[in-house]
Image (tube, rainbow, N blue to C red; front, side):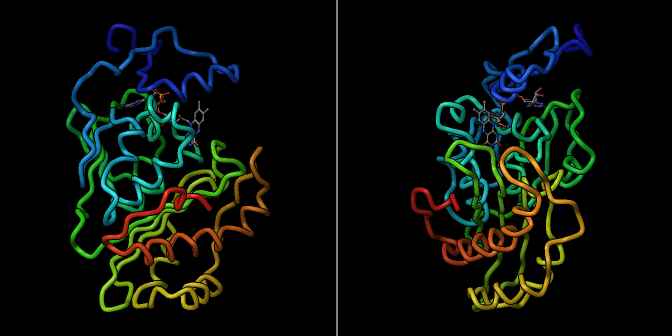
Length: 268
Ligand SMILES: Cc1cc2nc3c(=O)[nH]c(=O)nc-3n(C[C@H](O)[C@H](O)[C@H](O)COP(=O)(O)OP(=O)(O)OC[C@H]3O[C@@H](n4cnc5c(N)ncnc54)[C@H](O)[C@@H]3O)c2cc1C
């Protein structure tokens, strides 16, 4: 990288890079593959290496909060892309439909760079990704067994299409109430983002369909322009946003800390 500086970029699985190239985007002179680095590909409860393929992530922890990331990986692209695509590449691509980013936001993940620096995921998403930063891993401090549950649901036209809405949530349930709530959405706006007004309104609520429906009628998902792209109009996204959030919250509540999602449960 230092030899070729601005004319070089790293490639994880190169699936995003090749897709952009196929659309006519100019490629750098040098692609530096991270593929043969044998470290940084772990998938553990609380730590996922940047070089872990999405196929590995989807076979990772199914319980607790990290289930949000596992479910997100399972609905990203198709199996052949997932066997090459990496976590680092999904995060660094910086496009609004990147399916892992809402789960990382809901987990309040920390991004670790190869030079030892760390940054909260929210800051990385908000400030945009800098090409000179090399991601080593993402971590979170919500290991399973502490009452946390997580889920991700994706709405797309067909199985392998980019998302119209991806919602990830991480909840702590105790005595039939939501004690802590994190809700993040992707594909709805220019950037994946948390929904703090909804998170606050959920505190103390029982996670029933009726209550969650009421909360989402009361707290609207507004404040930013909805995304318009080849997959859906902005007005359609605005219409389905509360439905997508409600279904994801109910999925997380239904699964609880120990439930294992059924095949296909991550699709709306
Ligand atoms: C047919 C097809 C369907 C797809 N569908 C989806 C989908 O449904 N949802 C979705 O989210 N994505 C989708 N993608 C996009 C892509 O596959 C994923 O985002 C994937 O996770 C990118 O990972 P990668 O390792 O292949 O990234 P790469 O293409 O290798 O890299 C992407 C960017 O990240 C940078 N980068 C890679 N690794 C690192 C690192 N460790 N540190 C810093 N920068 C890094 C690269 O320099 C590059 O700028 C699809 C792609 C294709 C081809």
